[in-house]
Amino acid sequence: MAIPKTLKKLDAAKAEMLIKKHIANGTGQWEYPDEVGDFVYKEGTGYVLIRRNFVGEYETGKVAM
Image (cartoon, helix red, strand yellow):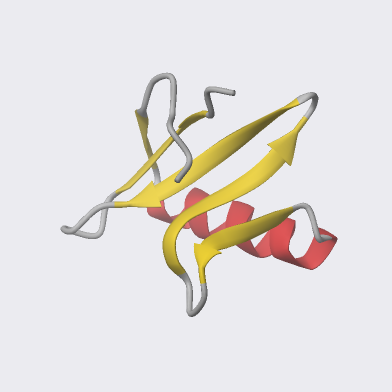
């Protein structure tokens, strides 16, 4: 499980665009099959996650290594 250092809100449209972009580029993946869990992608020398909470809002943050 990816553990974020901090979390901030992310617009749903931007989150979905980032997810599609990183899946197409092969630089990101879902934590579990069927788009379940956090979406983690590589950015620079680290990783970033996108998390959808239970009310459909998105959060993002750099992952602690």
